[in-house]
Amino acid sequence: MLRAAACASLVLIMSGVIACKTTSAAVKVPDPAMDTPLSKAKGSETAVVAGGCFWGIQAVFEHVKGVSAVTAGYAGGSADTAQYETVSSGTTRHAESVKIVYDPSQISYGQLLKVFFAVAHDPTQLNRQGPDEGAQYRSAIFYGSDEQKRVAQAYIDQLNRAKVFSRPIVTEVVTLKGFYAAEAYHQDYATHHPDDLYIRINDLPKVEHLKEQLPELYADR
Image (cartoon, rainbow, N blue to C red):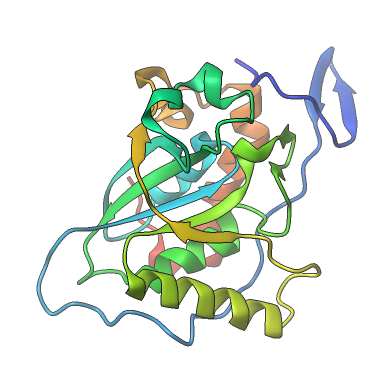
């Protein structure tokens, strides 16, 4: 299934198939200068981020070490509008997001953000990501604590000062007011549909970039 989104980038017509040509989101980024220390004991914490279609973001973080679960869903809006068809209107304030459950003794919050900025999406695209357009595809970090807020904002400032990207980062850093799991058919979509044209063009390369660029954070699952 191709997503119901207009291809705003160059259209390729090959063997009767029309697809969107997208630009690789893989960028070499430094470690965050400000980060949460690794915990001395195993535990469970959560992070919520948004960066375009949640299929690809979920696929990436399911291959990150220390991550035990990733759920596709919606954040930024209210519970009564947290349905795919409604969110797709772009008027609900929801963004397609993922909730990441991770062990803070294995990976830090800052390292999760490094994956987010390096390979999961392009943080310089405003209200869009690749072929998908609309506020529901915006880049956002939904923080659940003051510590997460400090780490996220400091990292964005660090990347902007270093001019890691050719354009300024437009990622929102906002309070997490609620996360609502998406419909069952969206969960693990890339895993269940690896031959889907959208997945092959837009999402599987992100997982490969993680493996190649950040092998120390890659988990083969």
